[in-house]
Image (cartoon, rainbow, N blue to C red; front, side, top):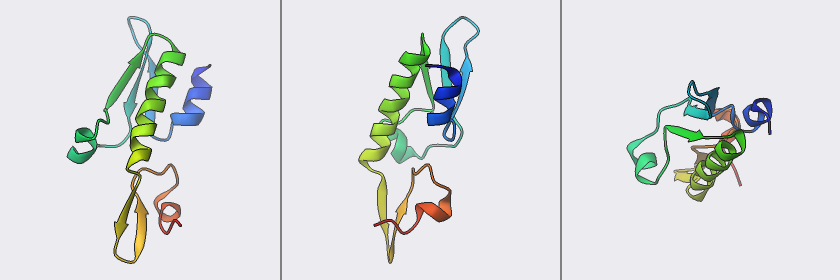
Length: 92
Protein backbone atom coordinates (compact mmCIF):
# COMPACT_ATOMS: atom_id res chain seq x y z
CA UNK A 1 0.00 0.00 0.00
CA UNK A 2 1.23 3.50 -0.83
CA UNK A 3 0.26 6.84 0.66
CA UNK A 4 -1.32 7.74 -2.70
CA UNK A 5 -3.52 4.63 -2.56
CA UNK A 6 -4.55 5.46 1.00
CA UNK A 7 -5.36 9.03 -0.03
CA UNK A 8 -7.46 7.75 -2.93
CA UNK A 9 -9.61 5.70 -0.56
CA UNK A 10 -9.72 7.95 2.54
CA UNK A 11 -8.38 11.35 1.49
CA UNK A 12 -11.77 13.08 1.31
CA UNK A 13 -12.28 12.60 5.04
CA UNK A 14 -8.72 12.33 6.36
CA UNK A 15 -5.37 14.17 6.04
CA UNK A 16 -2.74 11.44 5.94
CA UNK A 17 0.85 12.26 6.91
CA UNK A 18 4.12 10.65 7.92
CA UNK A 19 4.84 10.99 11.65
CA UNK A 20 8.13 12.62 12.69
CA UNK A 21 9.15 9.68 14.86
CA UNK A 22 8.17 7.10 12.25
CA UNK A 23 4.86 5.63 11.27
CA UNK A 24 1.80 7.40 9.90
CA UNK A 25 -1.19 9.33 11.15
CA UNK A 26 -4.51 10.56 9.80
CA UNK A 27 -6.49 13.57 11.05
CA UNK A 28 -10.14 14.11 10.15
CA UNK A 29 -10.79 17.00 7.80
CA UNK A 30 -14.12 17.81 9.46
CA UNK A 31 -15.29 18.19 13.04
CA UNK A 32 -17.15 15.37 14.75
CA UNK A 33 -20.36 15.82 16.69
CA UNK A 34 -20.56 14.68 20.30
CA UNK A 35 -22.85 11.89 19.07
CA UNK A 36 -20.17 10.75 16.60
CA UNK A 37 -17.60 10.62 19.38
CA UNK A 38 -20.04 8.80 21.66
CA UNK A 39 -20.53 6.21 18.93
CA UNK A 40 -16.78 5.59 18.80
CA UNK A 41 -15.43 7.76 15.98
CA UNK A 42 -12.00 9.38 16.39
CA UNK A 43 -10.36 12.63 15.29
CA UNK A 44 -6.93 11.02 14.82
CA UNK A 45 -5.80 7.50 13.91
CA UNK A 46 -2.18 6.28 13.88
CA UNK A 47 -0.32 3.28 12.54
CA UNK A 48 3.26 2.00 12.42
CA UNK A 49 2.76 1.19 8.74
CA UNK A 50 0.42 2.36 6.01
CA UNK A 51 -1.26 -1.04 6.15
CA UNK A 52 -1.93 -0.68 9.87
CA UNK A 53 -3.28 2.84 9.37
CA UNK A 54 -5.48 1.59 6.51
CA UNK A 55 -6.97 -1.02 8.84
CA UNK A 56 -7.76 1.61 11.45
CA UNK A 57 -9.35 3.94 8.89
CA UNK A 58 -11.40 1.02 7.58
CA UNK A 59 -12.64 0.42 11.15
CA UNK A 60 -13.70 4.09 11.38
CA UNK A 61 -15.56 3.74 8.10
CA UNK A 62 -17.38 0.64 9.39
CA UNK A 63 -18.54 2.55 12.47
CA UNK A 64 -19.77 5.39 10.25
CA UNK A 65 -21.66 2.97 8.01
CA UNK A 66 -23.44 1.39 10.98
CA UNK A 67 -25.41 4.60 11.53
CA UNK A 68 -25.03 6.14 8.11
CA UNK A 69 -28.49 7.47 7.33
CA UNK A 70 -30.75 9.69 9.36
CA UNK A 71 -34.37 10.24 8.47
CA UNK A 72 -35.36 13.84 7.88
CA UNK A 73 -39.02 14.62 7.14
CA UNK A 74 -39.49 13.94 3.44
CA UNK A 75 -35.97 12.74 2.71
CA UNK A 76 -33.06 10.59 3.83
CA UNK A 77 -29.91 12.56 4.58
CA UNK A 78 -26.61 10.72 4.55
CA UNK A 79 -24.35 12.38 7.13
CA UNK A 80 -21.14 10.54 6.34
CA UNK A 81 -21.26 9.86 2.62
CA UNK A 82 -18.17 10.47 0.55
CA UNK A 83 -20.40 12.16 -2.03
CA UNK A 84 -20.81 15.95 -2.09
CA UNK A 85 -23.87 17.08 -0.05
CA UNK A 86 -26.16 17.44 -3.06
CA UNK A 87 -25.42 13.84 -4.07
CA UNK A 88 -25.73 12.52 -0.51
CA UNK A 89 -29.39 13.56 -0.33
CA UNK A 90 -32.34 11.50 -1.50
CA UNK A 91 -30.95 7.98 -1.28
CA UNK A 92 -33.13 4.96 -1.69
